[in-house]
Amino acid sequence: MNPIALPIAELKSALSGISKVLNHKANLPALLCVKVERTADGWIALTGSDLDRFVTLRLEHPAEGPPVAALIPYDQLLQLSKNCSKDERLLIETTPQGPIIRFALADNLGASKVKLVPMELFPQTPRIKTEAVVLSPAVRESLHQALDCASSDETRYILNGAFIDASNPKAFNVVGTDGRHLYSANSFTLPLKLSVIIPSHKFLGWKEFNSDGEWQMRADSEHIQLSSRRWRFINRQIQGKYPDWRVTVPDPANDKTHITLDPSKLETLIKLVQRIPCHDPDRYQTIGLEWRDGKLQLLGKDGDNEPWTRVPVSDVQGKGPEVSIFFSRRFLIKALGYGMNTISLVDHMHPLRFHTKAKQMIVMPLRMDPGHPPAPQQPKPVNMPASRPAVPSPSTPTPMITNPTSEGPPPSTDQKTPTEEAIDMTLIIRDKFNEGFNLLRDLSMKLKAINRDQKASAREMQSVRSTLRSIQGMKI
Image (tube, rainbow, N blue to C red; front, side, top):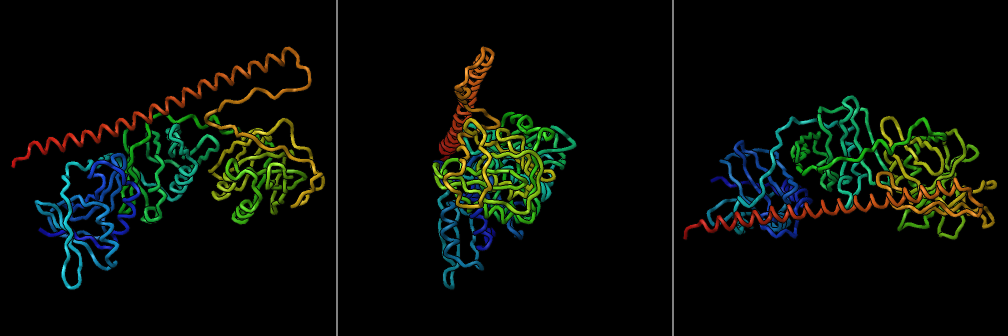
């Protein structure tokens, strides 16, 4: 039987991609292996899986020979590929006792035996029969940006991916949010009838997968498949109803202040933001944005008790009322990196809106202490004197999708009327209700996570039972 030839140059790339889905602590031997097969059409493919995800690479050139498949331990393939040069190849031979890997050894062929792992133990790759949808470069870029803005919190699993909203057939949206900031892009359509949630995974950001030609997407009720010219990635869809993200987007008609940055200076501005002092790098990475006297300044400081350093931003156009607002510099750097050069504001308490053409990012501000910052004297760019009026320090940000428990209204030294006291009581009651809803939501997400783990354990047990049944049926 013709052996399966694996060129080392392609094998190293394949193992690098497959390693991103393998669970190297799996208890089932089959999940620590790479499925190496030659199809009926002569194509050679390598597949790795962790039960929920599958990554497959098809080699560049077909080969002659009948269809055959073998399970080879990933670590064994990796070790042999490291000891071979790029112009060499490995030969996989299948025997009743188990596969044998042959490799160049001086002027002869060396051999490495492989422990036999029954092919039946390897999870079956899902076959998605829906029509393939081509994702244009613009959609792919939006998809990556949405995934970059998605949540990584397992208790909010529904937000752990990019949402392709097909509710409006004339204008699809790609959405990603973690509750603190929200990204959306539109002005494109896809031949999809139902919305889908693409789970975040490091393989989707892998450089080689992204440089391997155009992407095509297939989706059914359980799985979603993204494929390039030679790579194929299959993942389970995130089940559930994605939150109504549109309710968090401010109405553009309410925007009062508009600031437009020079698109050619965004990279320079990002470097400037990264150099501005940060007094809470491990928490919010706070930065301030101040529009005053027709000029834009960025605010930062080295310590909680230090005065704010004001850094002017050049080549800026704007209009609207003066405003100072604080938020995380991570979101500012991200929005600028996406090319969003327009900032629209309502006031210091409402969300900011970064936008350009068909993309926008909504960012929740950091809640301020009571009162607005006093108007500064003639501002200096750096090293502000201690006698300068200080801008209040920001506190906890308010999330967009899920509202955390918030404190009641700040105490006031002025005597309140009975009506004002009643209003304060309604606010406190509202916050208590929100607290209860948030606890129920968190409990629901934790139960879902437990249910997923139980299903995975059940699938592993089923594989073990199948192995035991096959052993019981063997004749000695």
